[in-house]
Length: 452
Image (cartoon, rainbow, N blue to C red; front, side, top):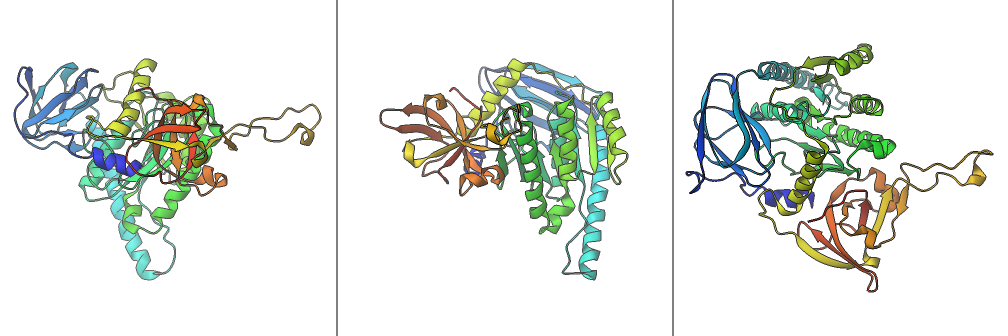
């Protein structure tokens, strides 16, 4: 279902050759060498853009010439050119201006270093295979993790590094650990997917063969033990997949993280580095975080930590903006970027579905605890959820687990949205991204909710 929704969404949200629509103002911008056009699309309508002449890219992906791309509302992006370009935009934007000071040279230098490591890993794996064709492979490409506070440009840099690698013919793995925004699928999840082509500037990261785990909340602080367990499980599964694919292992992994960098958030970042065995740590926009990580990681052999400046085009987003973005992202899953999808409404009996929640319930009865001790909640315990009207508007994950005991370690097939609960008739109404029966009858509930 994750795949189906995104595959249908991939039906050309970009646009088509031709001029701007009638009655709307078109603006032209001339970009000099190594400058960028920074654009913030308003909330109410999409904005169209085309490359008139020269060469330019968005998040590392080259723009096609003389082709209108339609960017949906609330998008923020920059069109960068290495050698100069003329750009035309049509529609209403909150912000559109040219900047000639960018950190792109330092970013492309990082890409060049990673590129050398990919080639070195591929050559070493080839030599290793000749000398010992039946042994496990120890060589691997760069494992990069991008860190920084909120609104430092982590997602943008991650997309650039992935797209630049894809343009060189590699197939790197994209990993998203930011449950607050969800760059691969909806918020409340951690996910990984291979990048076979430069990432589409409009549609974002494709979901052809995604590996998605459902955390169920938009901040790791709700259940840090569950978050750590899922990160560890994702890393373990990814290692198993890469162990059998030499080219993918040489291409490496690029990991996007959350913006919580203080206290428990910092500990979770260190856990992510260890879980994925990251060898390159990129720190954006904060000297303090770089210093703290440097002091800890200098004792780890083979780990490089690099401090990078954030782009001046990065815009601070308040909590209201983030909440609205999460709503847009969830709606996009069911309806597509440009409302091109038609989600399917279904009805099921209570007895047809099993709903569970991970976390909660006493870890042990009082009789089994020392005198005076209080039972605590088990953060990774699977607890049945009674179907009630409390589930209306909830977004539930459809798990691949064969039984409830496997829920914690099973990835998910997709999501459904609960529209109504009929208690007298014991029937539950839901919306799925595609018609047909659900892949499984075991669903996971968290705190995610969505009102159309």
